Image (cartoon, rainbow, N blue to C red; front, side, top):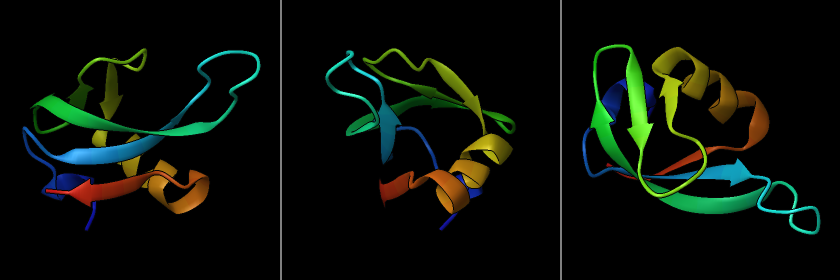
Amino acid sequence: MNAQDLKKGSIVEIRLNLSAEQMNQPVKVVVERCTEKYLWFKNNSLQRMGRNTFDFYIQHFGYKIVSI
């Protein structure tokens, strides 16, 4: 699975810095909207990310696709 497979309603696990005590925490979020090049996420500080960037983060930073 890669970022091109994602659609509205997909669940992904990304890493966020929630506070100074909670750095690099895995958080599950829902894809709210997607286009050919971008993904928008619901209810978090990360609003939009490019699909190619998301694929790079899967390979190098531990981001995961939980469900499509």
